[in-house]
Image (cartoon, rainbow, N blue to C red):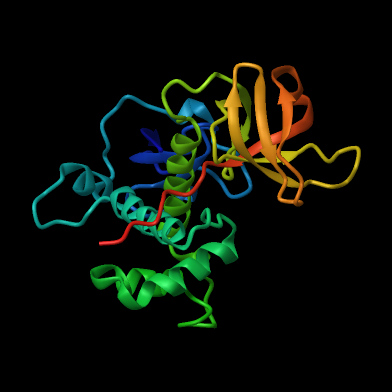
Length: 246
């Protein structure tokens, strides 16, 4: 997530929190929300970016890092995102990034969340407060963005010595890039022609190409390097981190 100062509609300079791949303004640090900078139903105008220091009192307090003062919302959101990712890894599944998947993750996490329990309960609305939407919680979008950032970093890493085979990776909150294929990655077949967007798991990466198991009882199929980008639409995710026991 990028942090850059922006000029708000009332002339105050805020710290803006941005999607690092698309430049989309997610929020401002003081929680005045992004509409302190952009009019509703309009896109962020890059001309609002500024090198001037923050003049918004709320943003300046957060940027000052005063001991005992409020924590920066992006730091809290990262802690929440790390908890969601750890929960998914321990369950052996990649984290669900859609609204319902995120809400269910916070439902699971809230009972044992310690100091974060009040926040997790707000993020798990629909169980604890059915009349409200979890998406009204300002930290929801930041948490989702941090989680996507972490998964993007994970998608870009493969074990040392793995032959380089690149494939398209689409970030949930916007932006795409080419990432290497590694053992344990899940790849989605290009279903534009067939209508079947099946998913396979990479079992080997070789100089000649990759082996993909479609979990249909047949041996993994070999794809030549030049076939990978034609046969697969995108890489879904890296393999989950192994479950650890104490």
